[in-house]
Length: 420
Image (tube, rainbow, N blue to C red; front, side, top):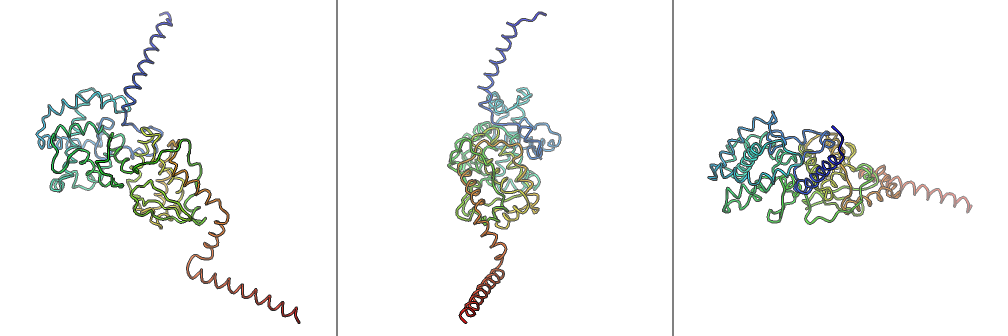
């Protein structure tokens, strides 16, 4: 077949036009991402559900099949509880299908029928789970909420970036099922706040939340200060001494009291105050997914990433962790300080940081200046070598006094000899 330039041109123009349409309709709606391989490869388990799949990305994983029957049981219980019909649920999901399909970063290979079925079961399961989590009577005899391995793993499975359905879908189905506000909860957002109360470290009120894209987005919001200062374009942390190096230069680390937001820092004089962080076996999963979300959705508002980046510079070895544990900046529930250091050092691998908050940048500049000051280093060395304990301080003081007295006595003896 002869080569035809016009045909090629027309085909390429059609491809480019299709790409433009994809950017305007798909990318702007996207909020649920597959974690980029360069990040995911460092810890696959941190991004993969352990007991329950939600949404299309992990649907059908063999190791999660045990929960599928229970999800169906929950779905049936929820429909019965609310007197909502299967047909009504399906119609609502079908109506939203084109919109929520665009929320996923990758093209979904499922047909419309398959995707409607997945969303039907997963959303009904979540709605019933949250309802039962709110009811102490139902909680006692419930498999998901009474058996520790399931009870403890499900909330963390529900915060994984790849394991999401759009929040607006759940909210719409909740409103369909509860058209009138209930006495116990007035909205799905309020019910969601109750289920994830453990993560709400900033004690945010659901009435102050305007938009949530999904549960990972909500957990990130729980960790943010309100209001947040603007980011400083172009500034990044290029160097920061470790906790041990700063401690040897005389810096003291303290817990920032009465502060629920992890992102707050306060540096003045010889003291750096940091909010307390509880380090447990799911801390890595939490931070990895929040950082991955910011890398994909909030590259210019990467506040959690700033905090993790700051910790990564401060903590290099178990000696750094030991100091922070001693000062109760870290509550180490892992037990092994080497594991804490390894976990923190791995969080920022292949993570891009383009700019940081002005507060963090200013604190880092001050800490670098503090560490470079030679007088502070000498004063710290003297205190470290001669004043480690009250007894050592007393002995050092006595030795100095004796040295001075010996010097005075020697001078007096010399003067006496001269005057003779």
